[in-house]
Length: 364
Image 1 (cartoon, rainbow, N blue to C red):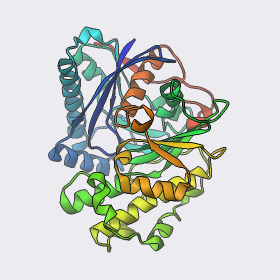
Image 2 (cartoon, rainbow, N blue to C red):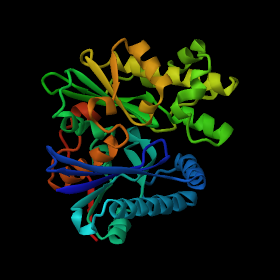
Image 3 (cartoon, helix red, strand yellow):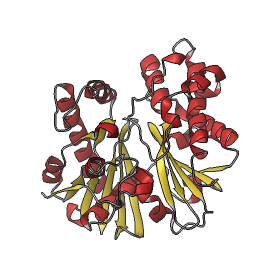
């Protein structure tokens, strides 16, 4: 099947899109991919929606700015699909299904609550193709964490690559998550802690920039290890996997008194330290770490990772994957798996009681 995957991650910077030909268990061909950013005003609305969503207890509720944010999410995803198709000389009928993750605004699996804004039914009508959406709800309802989801697909995406095992695939979006693939195919996954969210929020608040391009500002700063140690005292790190995070679960106010460069360096070091701590919770020491997501474009963060992990760290692009498109590719495959009733989550990835399928199908 030819599937499009759409991902708007916890960094809230834009929409990643990718085409994959797959049967849900194997990749037949990777197609083109693309990225369509939110503008500054859209990012501001999404930021307000994240703040207001903290008070929600009904996953169907869309009060105030959250409804406005959902309209932005749907509109930007529709434009992304239409631009992607026209830019690659494709017809809508060339696509069998679209995997639409939406935008997570609240994730509290302990309360059996996860909310992704984005109207899959409306997107299906607008595009005229079947859309699978609401991927996390079934897992959370069954007692799982509902996240991370991409780990189910990481073995599929890496199957044809000559990579060592055990292998760790590390996605660094707003939140970090790791997938451990053992020599025997054992699959373990969990959120490691904040990745880019705290750094992005600080630089956006102070300069209006979406992120620290190439980690240049952080590279000029000094790490305050005392603050890193204080941040690592968060109870989340003492929990055993599987476990997952809300984007705003961590408070970086400890760095508020630092100059911007020092704050970004300290927060990058915190991200690296949280991942190194997560490495200690894996079943075995990975022979290689493959890094995807926005963090893979931050040389300062990658250097800190290599220092703290003491292991081989490569970007997804270096091993033959697309670091920017990996999550979108995963949701393309997840959409096909959902159509076929195949598992999207496992006990080792989300703490689900058994392998579970999920997702909701919207027809045009």
